[in-house]
View 1: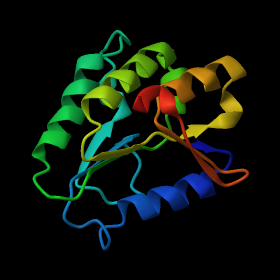
View 2 (view 1 turned 45 degrees about the vertical axis):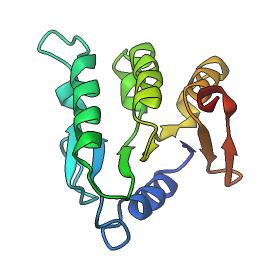
View 3 (view 1 turned 180 degrees about the vertical axis):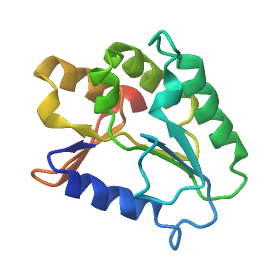
Length: 154
C-alpha cells in the first residue's frame, strides 16, 4: 500500500485489524514498540530486527512471519500488516527488506493477507518499481485504487 497521509494508512490498518470482523484468525503487526494504536494478537517490533551492532536480522523476520502463519488453524486467512515499511529504508535495510518481501510472498501466499504500507513520498521511481515487483497487489491512496500486479502472482 502506498499512502500519502498517516490518516489513510491508519484507516486501512484499523479496518484490516478490526477484531469484530476478523476475530477467528491470527494477526501479526510489524510496528515500533511505542505503537499502541491497534490491538493485535501478535506484534513484531521493528527494534527486534536489529542486533546491538545495528545488523539486520532477517531470520527473525522470517521465523516470526512463518510461525504466525502456521499457528493459524482457522479457515480465515492469517493477516499481517506493517505500521510503516519506510522504517527499513530509514535504517539502511531497504534491499534486505525487499528480498524478504519476495521470500514471504512466495512462502506465505496460501490463506494469507499481507499489507505493507509505504509512505510514497519517501521513495524514488526505481524504489517504487522494486516494491511493486515484490507484491501481488498495490493499493494507492491518491487516487484510491487497487491494482493487481502479475509479477509475484504468476
